[in-house]
Image 1 (cartoon, rainbow, N blue to C red):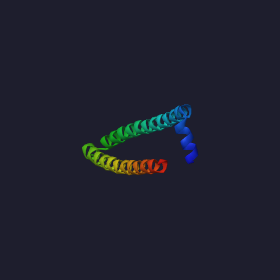
Image 2 (image 1 turned 90 degrees about the horizontal axis):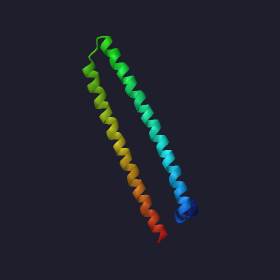
Image 3 (image 1 turned 45 degrees about the horizontal axis):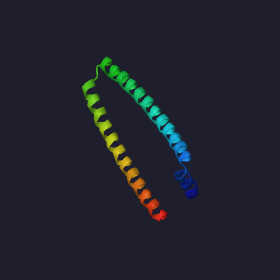
Image 4 (image 1 turned 90 degrees about the vertical axis):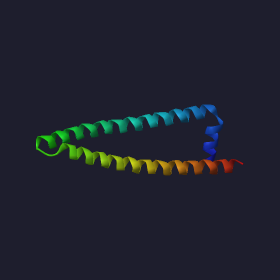
Length: 99
């Protein structure tokens, strides 16, 4: 694994191919997440229409959804921070092994 990584990093052609593959994968992941977000928004609008039609309190539901969304965002930020922390540690370890 280390030899493969060293080969990719030492050869600019391999590095460009690896970065291109990584960019394509990231684009596809973002595209899927965006599509999922669009579906969620449409379903939420349909749900609010249903609540309004049945005589429920739409404002209360929106506030609850906003609070839940903020909780999910905070949870996501914590997970991203953990990933960044491990990435930095791996980078430091990689630099130590090169010396």
